[in-house]
Length: 239
Image (cartoon, rainbow, N blue to C red; front, side, top):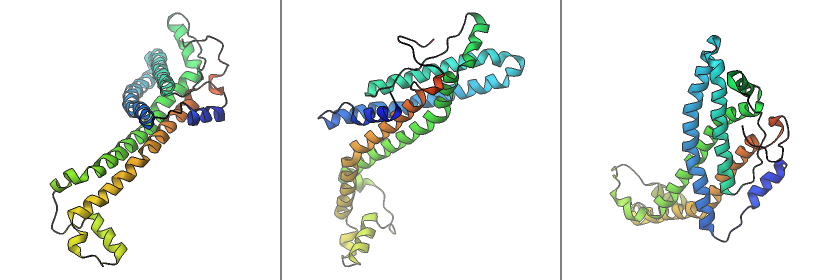
């Protein structure tokens, strides 16, 4: 499957009449990705650094294949998550290792495994941090805005602090509305409700966009392609 075909498959997949079903699937794909990538990052980076630092005394040379195998395991998890989400991602071929320590060194000659390490340490973590932060922020904006009337009056207010709603209302009306009205809790609640409704209405589209960003990035880096060095044979498996 070519990359344009793969991207189209993401955009048109699993059309379901339930917006909530799609939204739940996107949440289940986006939110755990950050914690998985965080764990992969804090595990792989120290291991790789240790392997490089001890390569001069050959310990790192034997440790590097283990690092690559761990990275491949995280890459397989990333592929499985894309497929569970509903995306199509072709399985790449991996070069198999041999028996014994010397045979394991063959993993070092496989560019696909090095790409797995690169993706899981330098690509996946920043992308999934971005998608996690945006998803949490958008969700908080939707829930916080629509429920502001219930909890907003508990917020501490300084005497000199002017609500954002009051400032915007005065700017739009040229100060025609009395300050007592512009700074009232009712106006502030309506303003936050409108913002919350806007976030809520756009939440499904935003979550779908974030999920697509993660899925297409994963597919581009971890799908079958030139990086594997050879085509995926029928029934091939990861070593």
